[in-house]
Length: 317
Image 1: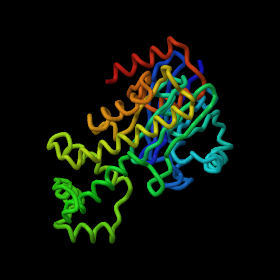
Image 2: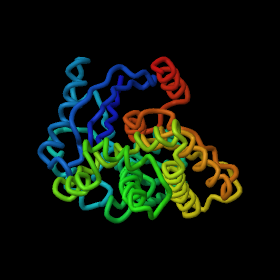
Image 3: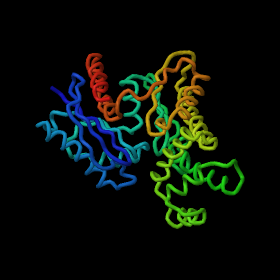
Image 4: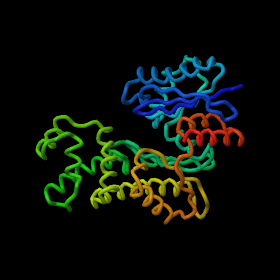
């Protein structure tokens, strides 16, 4: 029997799953980040290897027994993909390497055509239709990532300053932001930001605080930030659908990432804005983990195997 290893390698961690051709998930393994642009090439390779060799060892498999699909952050450009591919050469991996956005799309559509919008620390839309592929966004925190966790966190910090000045409506965001960064007062906050600039992930993690204030306290400024983020994410999806020439027809649109867990102030306006333009879009959360999607990049599974994957997911909920 041929086995598949699907790997979702991001900037925070690398998760691998072992799947057989019946669609049964036999095991999983986790290691550190696999984005070589942030952790370095050597460390990224070590983390990818730890997942592959770990799964093989735990299930008494050799590399000849497995095909490997890797959905990795940091390989969105051809030159970066080439660097990683060359670094992995010589290891006897029978593998397919694509971006983590491709893996997320496969997880959302179970290997079929459609569009995925991913919004975590960054944001991107990716779609495939009839062999045509499009990417929208994903240009990083300096040039884009609109609607992402970083976008929301940065907006929260900026609006906290505006609220403090009196340039915008009163908001709990000022208090929340100071507390998040353990700052005593506004001057302390400003000094901290410029003397010890927070990591992108720290800024993105502010999304949870913004969501709490929006959902539990109905803070109007926090709600506005989330709804603005939803509009940006909807625009990613709409642009991808237009570039794929979807018109008055059904298509799968999946979404994934921590931002979409921020509540109705994200998901509801996201759905509404997409459906205004594409009323037949089938908008659903990602059906499977992107690591499973990476395994589906290798080749399609049978319908029975896909059904088994769904049952496995339901059993783990």
